Image (cartoon, rainbow, N blue to C red; front, side, top):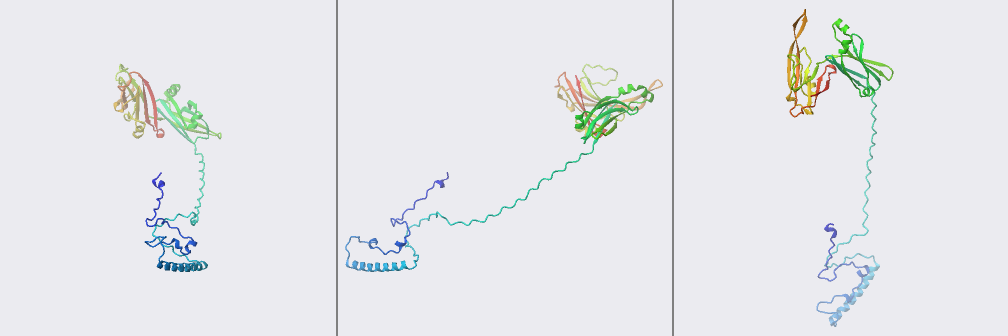
Length: 376
């Protein structure tokens, strides 16, 4: 509690000159009453019980006449309209007037009308977008004999079923087919299982030997709509730079003279290239996209491989031809690139290596990621 809450009003001290100096306004009767001789002050040096001297008796007689005149004057004033007379000024402190119990009414200000709130506009519902046009994108490519690919669907809400096929273009034959599962249609992505065309080659060997050819394959997808109609899409395989993954133990012995091998190491080795050594390096998928390179990430026994510990080896081999029983050079070369991946020193002696290869494809201009696992 604050001090001013417990402070009491200081009592006003009476004037030292008059014992009872507190001022009380006279009532109307007292204000106009004639003087009372008994209440008069005695002059200095006299007391109320002294005998009056002759001069005093004359003064008393005059006072009696004054009193009678005052009575007559008071009677006259009472019958006339009373005038407010100023009270006798007495040298006493004026008390602070108490607040009236019924203060004068304070005029109540007119209330300011509250502003009328503007109505909140109801949100306009966004129009339901119309279903977009169906899109079907095929990506189909091969690393030498092995073919891979995927199907990507957009706005496929009206597709009720789909079938994927791999066909031989020249023979018009279906070499593989599968129905795309409904949940993968809903997701809009289906990966085609790896397909090796060597089976096709040997199955139609007479045809390829007679025409000195090799299998040419295409991916075909047929979509059945909820209206009963069908849509068909095809994509011919695009040849991409092939590669493989290898590992050589420390005690590895080469199988032929001049074989490329690296004891105690893993490697991603390119297939042949007719133009230049393929660009294979340690790196991420982002680097594969930016540099248009084949990038590799690896862990050995759960230990990540430091890219700085890897090294790139390139080599060139002349292309030979066999004619008239003799082997001769053609003047052209095959180029190869190998990314050598050493086993980290803190990796266990036995375990499995996980190798991820990122490759930017010409097909749909996308990055393809493939995982390989090798036990050592």
